[in-house]
Length: 196
Image 1 (cartoon, rainbow, N blue to C red):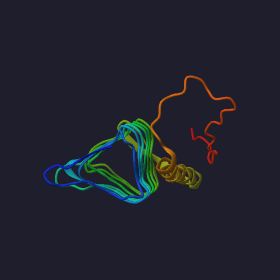
Image 2: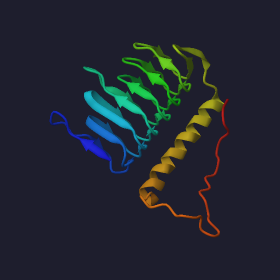
Image 3: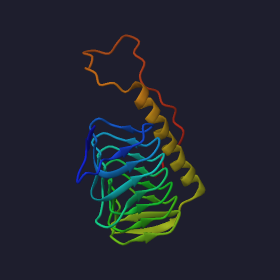
């Protein structure tokens, strides 16, 4: 991983968290306990502070960028899908931001909400707790159901487990030219069904 100080401010990463070696963490960033930061993630605290709270996961190719005079906050168990952009906003606890979604400056996503993949949250948007938010520009479609919230929580728990798996067994290596005889692949118990 590449960790950069700027203007004398150094990022803080709790030792229980996992940051992929290809991720970049810059400036005024504090990463809490048991957080997963995936490959090619950029967390840029060079314009404003960023706080990523305990149990959150930031998946591959996400960008988290601060905003002047504002603290970007991802509360506990934030689940940020592949390729999402989180820009100078507040994600309350236990939210899911879908793949390639964009959340713009000064917006607030209420706790236990789900933002659909490819949705665009305009600047200064505010959504209540347990909102299902979809579209471009995004609007509330309905309340997140109990089943959907359970599905989200199970997905986040899988990333809690991935932190430990990465810390204990992720090793850079050269590829094999052929599969080993009796190769055992990765079998990860599916704990939830796909939502459509």
